[in-house]
Image 1 (cartoon, rainbow, N blue to C red):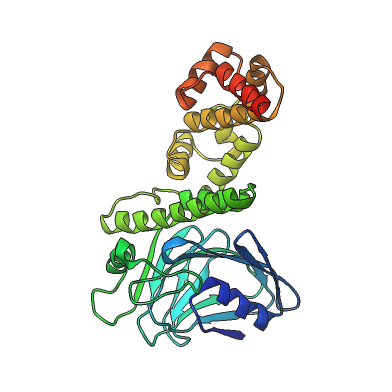
Image 2: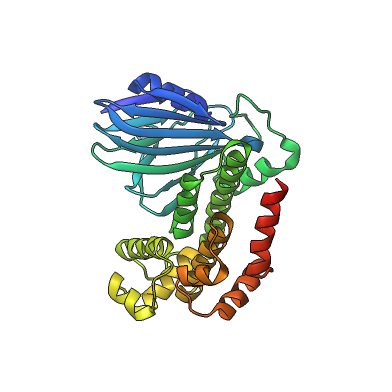
Length: 347
């Protein structure tokens, strides 16, 4: 086992230290720094961003070739780690000899050590890790070396008050419910294709949304609200996720609850439950949502007329399409298309 001692809570400095210890290569594009690994120790990448107000993002997409312990050594401020695994789960402990807790795939988790205690994340050899970690500074310290924390906002004091042990000077650890909405947001985060300041703004907005979902899940769990567990197991959650991606890729196909049940092996009740958990929508409304997104994209990027677009997204009635498009975008598809042409000419 290889142990990496990380003497900071700043994600940028963390991956700089990991890069030195694991012989990686750093690149920075538009405020996002990525560590690239491809050697006998690991293959993959680790990315980070420093956001506003002391919030930082650290993302792992790595396969380790040996067992790794990452020891986040105690620092002033006792940052809070919101950790979520999209693939294989990982383990966490307070100090290297402390009780080890397993953070499962799709499970929300929040940990915060007190002064003099290290946060240790354990990665196993041969496992593929896709980990999203959001690090939040508290009122008693700073984690960003580039930006001061504005404690007047009260954000840190509020978060610190939520995520601390009821007993003073005790470590805080919370392993919560499974949450598929976070998995969907992480997928969106990795799919951002904008450049420049727009890319930074969109990514920051998604990271903040992930943090909000983590905090909301914690609140729901405390109130014993079954927000994202239901009766779905891991395999069934994977099937819902795969089915959602299939519909995104092929919005033009004809879908029925029966055909989707046969494709996934899930009952209609499980399908509806899964889509409500992941998207907050019924299966039918999710299909309609994806088709409207596809139509809007075609209007903006192609020369197809409205009738051709209707056919391209799997609908047959232009009047029905216009009705649901206007309901979603508060604008008729024809007017939206004409506005695209007008805007293009103006440029």
